[in-house]
Length: 311
Ligand code: MLT
Image (cartoon, rainbow, N blue to C red; front, side, top):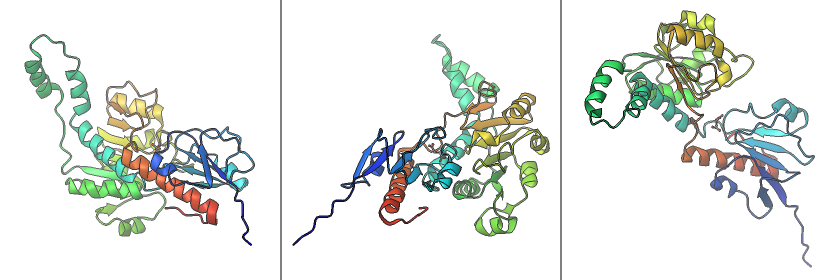
């Protein structure tokens, strides 16, 4: 005599667009939609979940991305909901945009292109372009310049290693690991230093740490004061790492030569030496698929076996 065991269908709620390849991880025993009232798990990218009510069945939330600031992690911990993220899955995408913007802004490419598009069709655009290009958009080569990498995790290390291949002098610091450990971890980074040294010696600074109580506002007037005049700062981590009022003052005075940010803030958005990027760091089709697949597998594994994995 055969026994049929009726397994309960599990509900997966999907907030935001999550790549199809990720959703395909769920089959048969799952219902995947965007409006389930009482899901077993939620997949999210950037929706702010802090004010959201969670149904009694919710067991896991997975963020298709690295940062978890849009998830009420403490509330989840208190109520036994497991929170996953996908560290590393979008690291290559972020690295490529960091290096692209570092080179492009150093060569004044964004300003030059924007200016070229303002030319009227008066038959003399080419001479105007050449003249203005030579006069107004002279840039700096990155070869031989010092790049300070703050945060030597998956993204920071990729940036550091590729910057070395571009003949930059790379120095690094990580707030969560000791200088010695950072030194050993960093295959090629020439010197792992104190944060103050990275601020003081860098021509370009790129930050790759999460936003926490320890890192919030770490870019402020005190540290701008110890930086080289005209330093370029790249922020592809979180806007909250930077005190935007102090940044506006430092940009105004030229102490910070350029601020390339993936988190434009209204205080600095329109300033001429700001490159505001509309949060594109992780926005490639490859990275979206990697994150979605990793997040979906974490959730599926957890719901089926209770395993909690971070990859
Ligand atoms: C991240 O935290 O990895 C990014 O915010 C991902 C994204 O762009 O959604």
